[in-house]
Image 1 (tube, rainbow, N blue to C red):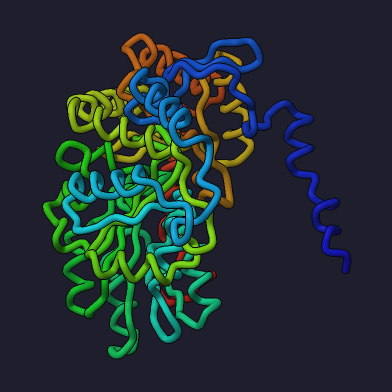
Image 2: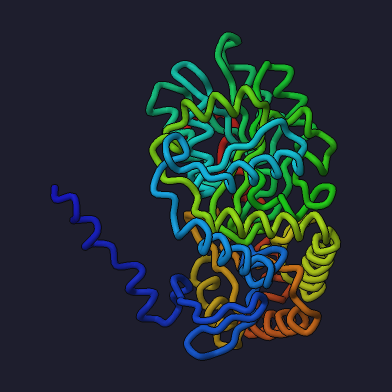
Length: 424
């Protein structure tokens, strides 16, 4: 078989484009935070992870430009060799203090952080135990570890009883790493961290939380999931990214100094990748300054998201309870989701259409997310457009709401059977 045969046979994206319903890869020409330009038109952005609205903040932009003037555009080497700048060390030390950990290690992307941390720690005979709905980077890191002889098992989404059933079957002598998103990137749900930590300790497992969508969003002053529950000391490792709250690019893991030191010398993602650029580090440092100096931005972000969550519910849409910046509006099947997205787009509202395999079969959704810099007029307009489209597509009738709710229940019950705890 020709390896490229499946590429030539893949026509689904072309078919959706021909229908005018393709929701991906639309180039943004100008970004003003809550408003963007696409194809010469202005759109209200309701799908960005720019949670505090700092990507266009003057201090963040100036910091990035100043770093380029001083250091140039890149580091031309890995952290392990010639690619460490004083900026990297400063950012690591600042983040460690902010998060309440002994030490931090930077990676060049958030995705790479999960790969480098999981595969750097977990070895042959160890186990990675992962929530079924964890981010794809965690799955990739676990599969990479599996390729080196580790075991990869999953438990039902946020189901702590199922987690305990899984851990009870893992050999007592094996090293165990329980990994979960802090805030789940699709639904905005928060991990039940107190139960997870309690169960992990009972079975001598270590805990890794991915706070990509939590830092700057929940916790004291935006310090993330462990902070929210008062469990920083009990949460062994926390991962994060710079591409959301920190208005930049890159990632990091925070934890005990001895563990971070080990990763520095054993993680291939550190040793064999060029280090984060000077501009990326400087932008993240400036964003951290603003977060520390203006924690009220976190409060405003959550107020905006809460307004939208209650607004969607009040209109009759099916969303999920939460306390984060992510507010999913579940519409059911793929065709409805693509059509819904197109009608929102035509009305000047830009959101993310999530369809299978990114979500279960009956949970296609408009994955909306909010910023501290959204104004009331932006939020009111989004609700107005959603209501118009929802009524046009018949999604706000009692029958439609019942059907969508039943589909969600079915997906959540059947997505990973209790008897199935193998990696797929």
